[in-house]
Image (cartoon, rainbow, N blue to C red):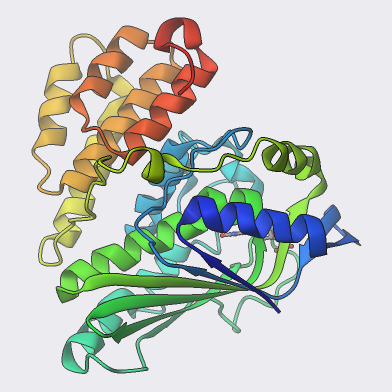
Length: 343
Ligand SMILES: O=c1ccn([C@H]2C[C@H](O)[C@@H](COP(=O)(O)O)O2)c(=O)[nH]1
């Protein structure tokens, strides 16, 4: 077993990458060559430091944010997701949904909302060891024809010493696109939101993986990332960097999530004439987290359409936090002549 103790996502990512380079085993799978590390336990001391900005990774923070809210919001459709994550169709059997979508399984497991259940349980019995949620479904997940069997299978929340720890168990994890692209981010957002509902602090995040892997198409990038490893990350370099709190309130959760997706649907019509009214709708959302996510998502969509003046206008209305920093880095990297040199 490989145990990795890390401060935050950057530390966890680099340490696991290094461990894979040294101790990982190359093997052939039906999806091609991979390097595998097995099993791995990653402990993250500061789960709120979840934003990865490092050389050669080329990740898209907006895709991560958009998918996270899609999960928390309980959705399984591709229509919304494809705008931010074009390769989402690779995991779809029918071209319109993800059969293994975590959000749907979390919020509607044959009629059970597992998030609501564990929150109620922890409110009644704070020290309980029973606050668990299941994502792997033995009834349907031994199907070998499908493209999408959930990789994240089991989640536990444990409230200890006034802090909410989160334990996640995965059968398999792609270190690059999975762990660092979405999984740690999405779960720690859920952890922070639930900690807020319970009025306790965020504790540690534990990520256990049966088979951690890197696919052959990432081997070269793996070496580049290790070669250009940075010693200190954004949280260390900018200690006063704002971190927008995940402040979606429990009592208005359904309403705010519904509003979030309604406002987002209007983004496809964003232009010079509609931008102010769209921003007004965004600003009407109660949660500063959801407002910030929407502003960065809209910036990105405008950026993709080469509407740079509008993209900059929306970007300027967002708060200076780690997510904004990561998006600035992406835009500077792609179009430095418009957005300036990469940070
Ligand atoms: O949330 C997810 C979903 C998938 N994967 C990765 C793990 C595996 O590398 C791959 C799925 O391949 P199979 O194990 O299903 O063949 O996708 C993740 O890392 N995180």
